Image (tube, rainbow, N blue to C red; front, side, top):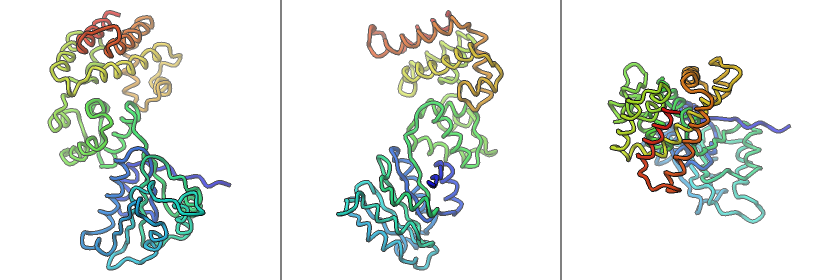
Length: 348
């Protein structure tokens, strides 16, 4: 019977490592380099003090690494330290040896019985590690963990990651604050986590709020896509046009293409809500794939303001605006198009 691989998140590993709970072997693999770099640096910083690193930290680089040498180093005991840390960076570049599909196959025997005082970290960027003997041994002997560092998609995945990371810092973050960060920083993970680290230190009550973000990051809590969505959901024309005007004067942080995509996602969910058979908050959460009851209520409120025909027309307006903003059939300025879109939505 095949052994099921443990599924682990960045936030969970981050919290675990900071608590000094180490695995014997870490395989950090995938398309998003930030998570891989952050975890291997955190392991080194937590497991070893500065004066312990000269004797107990060994770094190998894929294009010059030899798997047999790496394994030999892993079998050495630490000097004046609880742990020895061995890191293989750019493991995808390790040259193949004769008789092996992948030189990482040679790690299989070590994975069967790793030295408890050694922490082996294998950083494999750009894809997944293809050494089946090694990964099978790793899973069968429960000797380590494989972390998939996937690219984060905008939308629900990004917002979930923000909440999870804030929680790993011991903080709560509300829906509006989450949306503000997702909207203005997006999938620049290094900047996003850096800002969350800063906010976690600045909050007195461990709550990351829109006001805290506005005061310390420079993102307006009143003028962002979340507020534009809210204004349109309530058919508040005055506020909606004030927000678009603010976007026009701050184009670097408020590209119209992001606003159009944001509104398309929102009104698509409102249309689903409008036609749902189960209009309870729990029913809507299940339908749109949200874990936020507050968000579900927002969709329900908007569905009461716009009938189904209007919502179908709004989806058409959004598609048209997206096409024209790319220069197809229109040479209008992107914010002129956005203002026109807002007018059409309000009068749908």
